[in-house]
Length: 542
Image 1 (cartoon, rainbow, N blue to C red):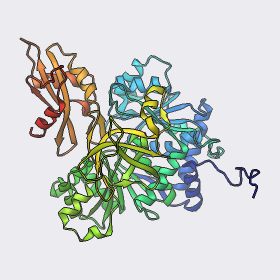
Image 2 (image 1 turned 135 degrees about the horizontal axis):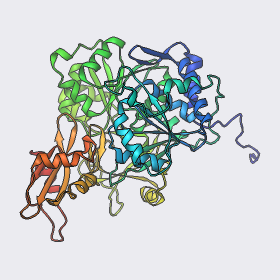
Image 3 (image 1 turned 90 degrees about the horizontal axis):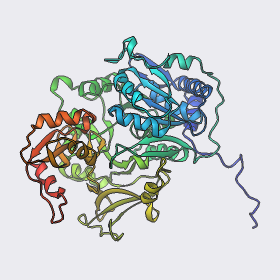
């Protein structure tokens, strides 16, 4: 049959975008709660209207296709609806880590070229400093004023000329609902934590976000109308795409500004939370919570965790409390999770401790991931699936980034050989499940955030007393990993551990500051290269 005339048209081809999920949710469940934050409650119909208002207000200030809108906010309704309103305007959503230092924030605003900045007044001190340090054109600033915040409620904390509510009020609730003309159009710009100096800007497209949200429903077995506790920061990989996922199933997001064990247990009881996502640090909060902060769970709660691999002992304790944990693995460059520990029914018969060991493995590729392979970082050879031979994790699929913003060389390197190269090394077991063992670039994952050892070392080297410095991961029961610095002083120089930590804190975010400093001669190769593998072993015993 001659099918040359059969071409894609408006009837059989629609660009994939998570905006479609919200349109359907508002039509199907207009009165069902979409977002709950304290006393504030918005339905799916409300969310569509507010997203339209936001898109309209942004468009009136020049936001259109490929124009960046930066958002620095806690997990509040404003950042949740920005995940729909900004892309509806055609703009690119750039959510900024609230734990970053002014220099890094200034770099992100300059490098991304944000035209509009929506920022929570709780973070006014660091954002004011960042705006002052920008070298490019300053963005229009819109203030989120949250009366429940612990800080930022004073008039001097306002950085812009209008509040978010005032900005939204000027928008049209009937702003045209339009999908992007091209599903490859950039939806968001997410900056890594800077594994080698300055952070890289990772570009996501509408197609990938649509597929990631669908894949999460299938991979996590999410039922209709879950109640999801958002402890994952919405600035991190767009909150793992769960805002878009919840629209598919008509779920409810309970957002939480300050994450703590008591708050989590209280919200589970108050709202009947069925699902939550969080870094291993959140798991640690729950299992180590004092008795007076805990509450019996009304039902089993499904948990998705990612970051530094949680110890099997923590996973076992979570199960005892009534939490069913599924570990996932991914990177900013892959829209978040692309590997999950898919549970096999036959594992139910294993002893409790062995079940925890199985859950400690990252697992197999997500439903929307085309391939997860291991390759020797030097030769490209495939190591045997014996649970011992290691290789770099390489990934292929529709939820791999478009590339790095304004960095073609890094993009080309990352995509060498038709796969995205993660920089992580892992083993594969005979059943196909992978387990991440180390990081080729010595990235430290602290509380779910990537920390560059090179960035910390660069700061240490600026101290007049430091001759040599190396930073590695030190295991930590709360944060998973924390930076540990090994320092060799110059002859005749002296400095204390507290002084060096304070020196680092002057220019680094708190989570990037070393938590331990060890003084002494550093182990080196014959060519003078510091042997970090020796230091990593030492750090385990500290």
